[in-house]
Image 1 (spheres, rainbow, N blue to C red):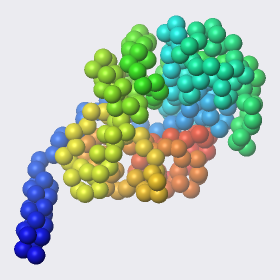
Image 2 (cartoon, rainbow, N blue to C red; image 1 turned 180 degrees about the vertical axis):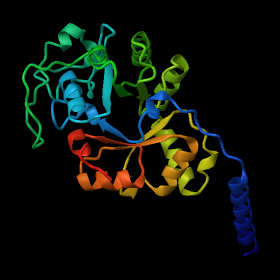
Image 3 (cartoon, rainbow, N blue to C red; image 1 turned 90 degrees about the vertical axis):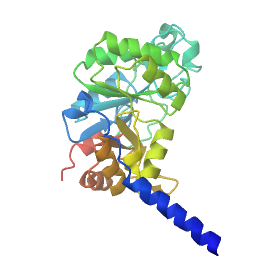
Image 4 (cartoon, helix red, strand yellow; image 1 turned 135 degrees about the vertical axis):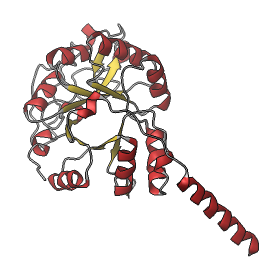
Length: 286
């Protein structure tokens, strides 16, 4: 009994000491998040309205109220950065095969129209092709982009860095990835282009915020993108948002399409909502 009490005492003492330790100052502000308190972020170029990850979808998303275009990228066999969620073209085109095995010309021979219209408001449009990322940069030079590196490799990150810098868009792009190694490589290779936190980094941040030790977190990125809940556990809490504010991290929640949940999250104080329906989010005021 004495041993248990002593162990508990030591744990409590360590926790109190950790609470009293000075925290990190947080990350510096970046232009990407300075211009607006709340951002309407079009998930996959608003894939419930037009074919996802397309130029046409991005243009439409902006027209209906999106502030930021979220998209995914891959690299073709001839080293062109293209906008696409899946590594293959099988799911939503009239072709098959891996993007990494195709040249841009081969890839753009396929139609990105729908095999099935699976959302009530989605429009089927024939003749849409997998776009290059550069085509979106050229069509929307004043817009901001949240870009996810899909492949678990460094080549795509190198090509993305070169493209962003060539267009002078380092203040209009934030890069993310589910792969921690990919993010670490990108940060090292491309220090002028900001990143969000990776999956493992987000897990540590959420855990520390839950136990009141968020001030000890040292962030490597400038924002957090995470779901509202994971396996039935709500991740978006007042403690997380408080910790994020202390660290100067933006918090964007995905993927929210329900108007009531949009309203509740805006009231809670998230910095952005990633949605398939930016047109709906645009109408939600608090």
